[in-house]
Length: 253
Image (tube, rainbow, N blue to C red):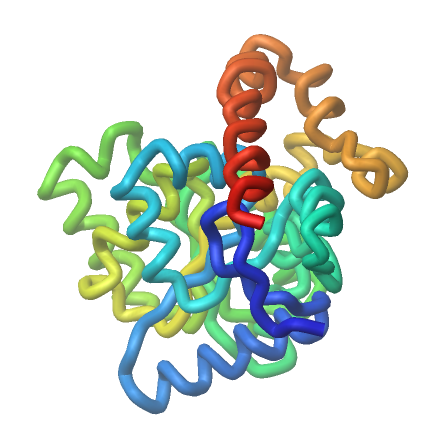
């Protein structure tokens, strides 16, 4: 089976969850040894649409060290083109695995983003689980921080002061990926990753779709039911554009 799958404008890394965690661990070790920086993305249908529409966002994804498929529609449709993914690796599934990795390898982790108090709740959950020596810090920046040079600098300094091995960014997409890309040189972090709603799910402030809905590619529908006003444009306007990407792939074939 292919290690890389190029489809819908993205060159995906085709790995199962265990392999994805190992690849990130290797990236952390390599970047720590070389004083380098990298970041991980988990493209879903909405991301693919934004990549096709926005050249700057496309550059962000081209710069990523690892790209894992997040979205059953992508996994299922890819089979029509003879490209089989080993697994869907969403940020929501990957993040808890990386928290476990941090415990095993004694990595320091930093959660940047989410509403005030949400990341702190996750930090407390894992400190209770693994003990007070579990190295985790959090910061919820003010709205619009990225447009204020002083505020942006202050937030980056707080991240760097903690010296994390993994930075979990919970700012939403494309804001989170763009923040990492624009500030990669300033962030003294081996690996950063935009994790979507993963922190909210882990804190219990947002309920995730039942597993059967995830398996049947209905997680989007569950989120729409829970937040119809916020999700309507994303799922019923923006993501209709995805049909254009499917047609592009058919023509390419």
